Length: 251
Length: 303
Image 1 (cartoon, helix red, strand yellow):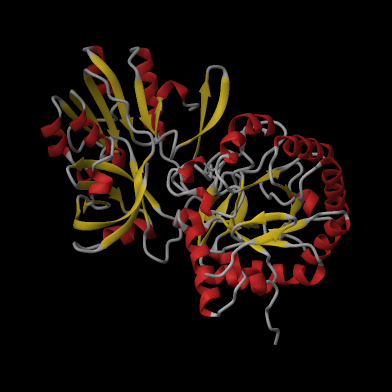
Image 2 (image 1 turned 90 degrees about the horizontal axis):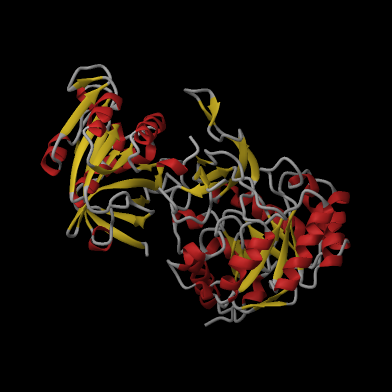
């Protein structure tokens, strides 16, 4: 059951050129939040729509959000100060389904933060994290603390493994023993992860992104085309997702 | 406290505030957030005879104080609605208004018949959807086509019929008169205004469908003006909508001529918007010592 609440900002800090981390005090949001869910935040008077931001972590009464400053809404969020309150609807959406066993987390860019809460919630986890370049790398220490093996890859080779997440993902899947893969990142990356997981017969869950309206599943603007059995369907990213089984998504 | 009861097209409404089609699904999602019996009614997501997948995403673009949408009537079809959604909706203690769209006049009539049998309280005939290729607004932009759809639905329906008008016409009053003459029990207006946004970096429209319907506070003054024009043109009751987000907005729309109002896009910003609008109307009526909300309809004092 989502709630509409005023959450107190505890801290806002910049993690990279375009990424900010916000810590909020909100028992109503933090306690029920599950990995892969998101919250829908009112961003001042000038931005009509709320902004959906994934839960990066929820511990006790504290909710952590990590977001990219892309436009006016996320700029507003990045400019909040400790003590201010934000009007937030949440927690929303269908998160990751975690069972027993070891999970492999695959994140790309701003798709990395939502996997941190999954890492902390899984029985055990390894991670492959992809970024454009060294300066864009975020949350590496947090993942190293929460995971067993962590591989960081950069597209330009300026840090960690050179190239995309594909090669390290293949290597780690070949070593076997994963209960599943949880992935979040750009659509092209998710598609590649889905294909690699299919090759290795490892169940894969992907967290999809789409422009949203209501955030609760009523307005049908955030559609993701899926197939269920033989039938194609338009599922709601905000309600049926954002996490879908990779084999259901029509890429 | 002021009396909010309104009889609209013969149907009793316990408040004059309903939620607009396309913004509220079939009620289940907002039903997790607030008590839906506090609404005057629910206009359900637009239905078609057969299921529709709708348009490809992105289907929404933000605008100054509003949004564009291009959902394209995604819905499970009228039969599955009657089977899977209507039983739940009927338990909610509020009026259920079925919104229907057809590609042909015959499709509208067939749906009206099915929904009358299934026991909805009112049928809203959508001749104004800007996001579909066949049917939709094509029926709403000509007096003859609007009248022929209305006549066909009236013949088939055994519940009151409200026709939803598009603002994308030269003279909305003329269309309203045509549907009144064809037997409509009420009209609702406005549907969305056709709009477009372009990403200047990619030079591509933000919406995959290129164009979409504008709604939200940005359209409010246009909606007030059109409700006022239609009020002067017809005698049948009006459900006024378009950018209402506060009780004051609703009062303004009623002064322009609306008997009831619909809240839609405002819900995306505030899920409780329809409740706050209702409370705002009560506050206004009490402050002005008006006993019944019906007393303000059409009571604008012209300059």
